[in-house]
Length: 111
Length: 114
Image 1 (cartoon, chains in turn yellow, cyan):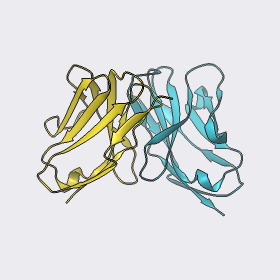
Image 2 (cartoon, rainbow over the protein chains, first blue to last red; image 1 turned 180 degrees about the horizontal axis):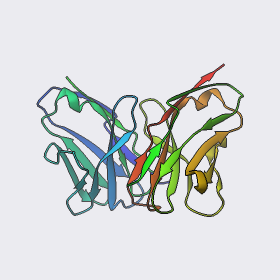
Image 3 (cartoon, each protein chain N blue to C red; image 1 turned 45 degrees about the vertical axis):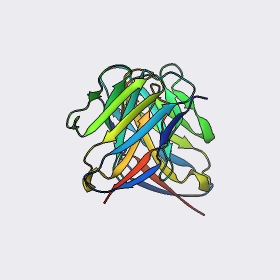
Image 4 (cartoon, rainbow over the protein chains, first blue to last red; image 1 turned 60 degrees about the vertical axis):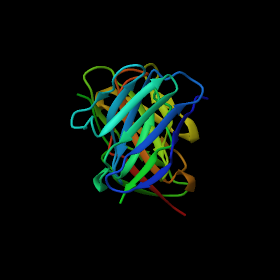
């Protein structure tokens, strides 16, 4: 079946640095990818919808300059957390254009 | 706006016993409904989904769910729980079958006692 591959699975970075998370659709063309954030013991909150070849659509309250999303090809969408701070520490998960295909998630810890 | 409520934050069940997880949704039109399971530090796995038709939906791992429009509910059930069913379960609602935003409930953590 179709798979969404997300990596890294975990990353630790220093405050002020940037971190890039990748989501690849391995055997299908993903014209749309969804990016979620999940705090410990909480639900998933949609951050943004990335669209291949166009700008991402961000949910209300999500800083687009801080969470840069790029969807340059039909198989790759990236989320870059810029100038990371400890409050950005979270679990980030991507989803393909159908409801079944989630990435494995990325645990980001900013120290 | 669509919303999902999972009233139970934690449920503890004995291995072999039955399990029912509650989910209530709010949506103006006919919703698409989903149940997912998440193991610690992992992504989400789709258990089952309801789009239309038979209101009793069968999923993977022995799970089933019943859509009750009159109660705005989509409860998940399993007749006999296995220790490997210990995980976090999320109910979600969407407006379209594919490519649409999903709104998730708060999740229910299931603990299985030996």
